[in-house]
Length: 611
Image (cartoon, rainbow, N blue to C red; front, side, top):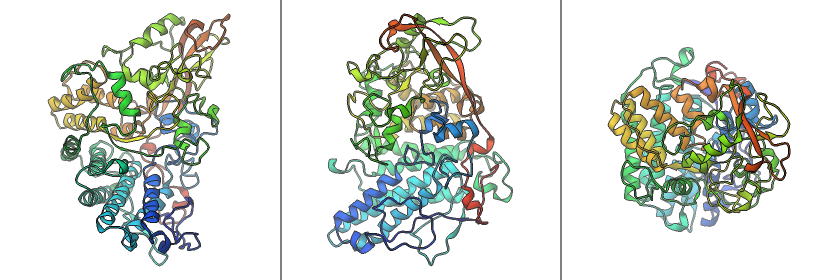
């Protein structure tokens, strides 16, 4: 056993108040709400449950990870890195560090928050039977829900850190707090155990409409499926670790490459589809073109799947529908992901999170072929007419995800705040000053993200999708391809590819199809917190060459000298070209997150290799 002093939040309450930075030392019973009061009524107990939902499911989103400012897309080759005070800027330029405050602004996770939030779940599970005005059936459901929430957090930590301590209860002051990290295998087994237990305790079908957003059996199956998909990928599913960790290699590597892990992933993801099909969920494709054909309603269907609350493709979403832009931390998610003019709380703080050329190049044209964009080294800038011709040729997801120079947003047509004129700031790096081939600016990129706000009009919030069925289909495509079944891989891949309005993929070579599937996953889940971990666990060949590390590029737009009105207007664009914006840092140690140095200094912590 590898000793690690777990950072756990010990409170005399269930955590109805925010106190995320208290380390595990001794129980604090001075809180204003004690256990007896919390579990004296259903109302209070349900508030404790909902606090668990809010704190657990925010994992990885702004407000729920270690970086104080920014979003994961800014360190995964999707968006630019933000301002100098953003944690994403620090990570992009210098890499992950062990020297943040409990991981904050050092690693891309808040290590201590994981354990404090898990403890809150166990407190609910251990005390819910005390509630006098709650039915036994409801108590059973709540126990299953918090068990599933613990599984969700363990799943996220599993692919961030590797092997983890196994916690089965809320710790007390008399307990041994120096609990050891267990192997990858033991950690994965525990996640599956938690999922199986939660599954058996949850309702067989879906919740009633007034309980939308709570864990279902389908959500628990999706947690299990994602964990097993990560377990099958090359980073863990290997005979040798990515960096030698001596006697602790089993924390970061299974020690063997086993194709059977892909079959486990297939079984788990097929179970998600079976549940979904039996409970009214499905991939949204309303075009009626038929199996294997491009969906003519691609923009609407993809926009609905990623933006519309309670849509039938989303198995689980994070429910935080606050309209208060100054509520902290509740509005933090929207602060870094709503770049529109509707957002009034320090909107300038997201000025430098524009779309990178690196990612723009991944999108297909609407006929399924590759677009031809400017490259560094070209002898002359391209006329703006070239740009204005190319954007309407792009696939639906590209148009739903971003607002581009010269165009109103495709995802909110007719809405002034989503128009070129009404956007209220530059939609890219642009200006009258500056000459080819130099960069006019850096950070505003080729466009701004508007994903999650399809037909949102003035709405400032969205419900972050945590599990969409598109992920299940792409997990299956990946797993079948790695198992040598290209026919089934294509069947599942094309469910998503066709829904996006693109013609069917026919490639059957395993290596070539792997790249196509990985590209599809990148596009479909742009800005959804998946690419940063996907490329690490794939050990993507370009991880150091323009994804996490390497040259990050942004298009530059020259504005006409006599331009008037908004620079975003098509009539004001003169020319454009590509330029390097910054060089991002990469080291193989970054395949997994570091344990905070504060834990290492206690003398019992096993650090991940390379830190």
